[in-house]
Length: 563
Image (cartoon, rainbow, N blue to C red; front, side, top):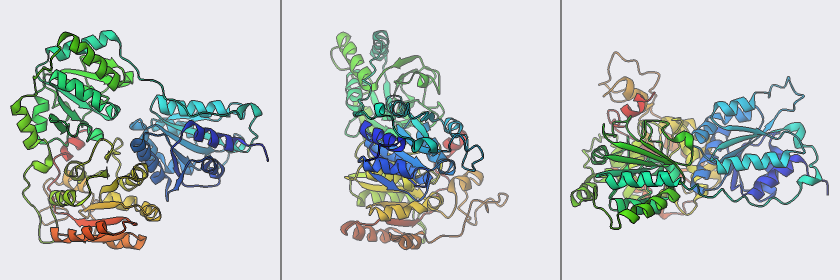
């Protein structure tokens, strides 16, 4: 048998370190790298576009808790994946982008770009295989950075090195890597946070993605300190089952949730940067409210707003240590914000499903809230909801219940449309035990529709809800507030031709790909969903929902304020 080359060594090393799944579009540059992963037991999903593959890998890593790998051809393959890589990097997703690169001697190759510079410009970490002798160490370093620092790492492997023989010294067994242990907070900071909680009268905890594995510890501390619980959008579902759960904090908050958060005298962000969306540009923070952040990244503390205390530490470890400290001085649980009146407000108004809806449906278009609520009742509770970006996005995010924090995949850090379908595919492969559900607008769905073939090929039981308003609804409502999409009541002084389109039969297009496709204009049309649910579910169901205008969603103004 021939001695392994560097491509084989890199693939074997990533597999033995614990890579969960690979995604990509295979070209000549990454052919051997991809096959090396497959030969060493890493499943591979072939996408139709590198951008889709990048987002699938991102979603898979978020929902599985394992490092995913994206493989790309050098130059254009990597640049095609740039938006998906940017989303993953901004979300601090542990991801390895395993990309070919031109040989050092190929200075005039049309494939040659500054791959390291491109990676850094997207917020990713640039790494590369420098030589045959360093290949093992370079690969391990990239993987350790992805896992221990929660970073997206672009690992470039030049073509001339891929075929080089691996030195015998690099062929030793590489064992699965154990992540770094929990970072315990400094005892002084623990006492400081315990003192703040002891003196607070209306504390509120807001947990983000960094706290998704610390729900039990945070909830125990909240119960003892009399705090209410909330999450950022990406951690939706974390506190399901808790009586004093407010739901999502920020643009997706119900009026009662927003009001209760605004009434806090202490807000603690757990693995949450308290950004403009989560805090509604700071409007949810009272003028006299103390603000605390707990995070494993020092750079995250105070990144978006002034804080009174920053605690560097793992969320679970910090919550446990603070609870121990608090119990030493206050043995019995405090009521504080957890009153009977507060509980009644939460039960009556913390979920959008409980907020009365005035049906705005017309003869041929369905109200998006009615659509979402009807589907919430129809679809199995064990679901994994993924959401694209656009004016519609709050409806699936707020009106489709999820079972827990691993039931919602929200790839919105970059605010790009077109990522939703790929997000749903990657999430579905991470959690095959749950029904994958996609909420997308017509614009975003059509932008990424090539990956519908991938979903069909994989026989995914995906329900894709397309909120079809025949336009880029966010721009329509932003620039012609209150107008219907291309309707007669549009502001005549605003030219919307660039953001409105003829109605598209998305259901028919979906059937052309091999999916099931139905058109929904009224509640009765949703009966067809029952038939699909009762069937084999061996192909996606695309619901082309012709939605009525909402005049601009309530979260839209918040989003545009941040541009």
